[in-house]
Image (cartoon, rainbow, N blue to C red; front, side, top):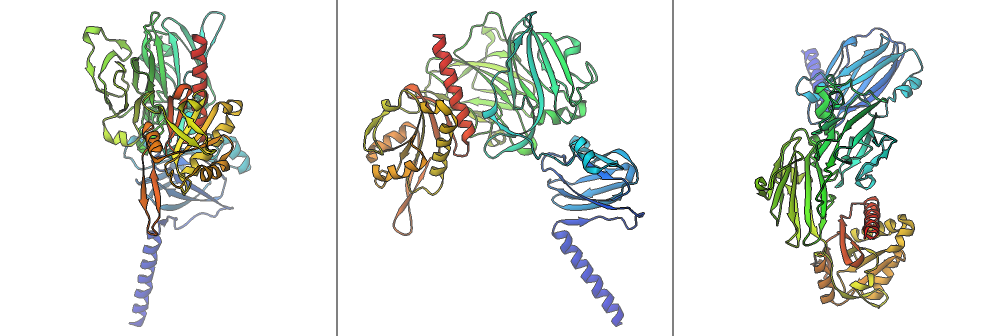
Length: 593
């Protein structure tokens, strides 16, 4: 009897320990018997959350070894790992770490894949196992194994160019260089996502030509997978259409393919991947492989503002970018009252539609899928749904000064960042009179000759104000000689405590390009109102107070013209890029006059 009690107790303890072990997120899956192995080889892998990809997707092991794989499934879905040649097929529960093992008793390359047959994402979740007699490290280096996303360049809109440059050969052909690259892309708002981008950016740089131009695009594939480029809406020769298995073989990693055609017809078009086969096209588009292709007519009634808006999607990450950024880091469309504004909207996603809504204005639909709409048939709308692959050109007259949202009215998409705004350049900023940290009276005219970075805060601010001032100062330094054209203004919203002396001690810590601005409470209220900056005191338990306030950084141009604004997390690179772009545009404007 006692023997049975002891056995039951041991069995119960074993069950409890097993439940604790599983509850802590680890499941060991080990075969009961193995043939003898020369060595043991341990590796760690993961299923990347929301990506349905292996990291790493190439593993190299020595022949004859007992291979032990510890796999963390970061995803919210179950996955599986299978290697047919080694009889391996194990479930990988969501959010758990699972260990599997096998004897590497065959030499060569073998495919490992997700064995959960539910959805196309699982079908494309593949990797390569290499079993070798050679030195594992040498073979791994040749395959680029084990790196995953480590070492990938992190890029953002600050690194992007708006249009792809070209050269003209002796026959008058416009020659472009286009490359597909593996990167990490910073969409803003803390969304840094593994991506595939044309010329290292999302979306790819706009290709803009004139109807009838002969275009040659040398496309190089630097991705780890095969791919193609399709010219959506462009009437190209059959062999240039970029559809794998129909018009061409997919372009393998490291290879170059030359696309050449006559740009026709005029209109808003775009280019995007067609994958290496029909099964992976959606994944490649979701990774970011798309860009605008605008063919201007020979006779073009050019609007005052011609803005291209590429809408994409990172569905697994819940991000819905506009031109490679999510709100609040999207670029605003800055207009002047009376201008004719054209917005070229392109839905370059593969799965979702976007009803784009503009506040404060009615627009005319002047082109659909790049094709002009006769004036008598032009609809007047303020909301326009774009299906995947569609484009619309809309126009309106900027006749209602303000700051007007332009956003997807599928509110989940808006919540994922598909928000921008039409901003009238004189609606932010304006006349003011105040005092700087030296006691000197300053007005809007004091800083009108150059560019200004302006933010609001107070000297007792615990964190954000210092971050903004450090970022602004770093941006001015990074601009080099152009930094001499930029002022950094810190406007206190606590003028009763932030006297010129107090303010001076504070701003001097951030360099000699920072000017502190204070004044009477009325002057500060007027100045904050001109920038739509909000603030209010918050009583504290010790009888004192702190200040709640806006954290935006504004970029103003010569004459007090609004250019852009940034969240406190936007970083130095975005600010530097915006200032350089503004200086370049202003120089072009002056030279064209």
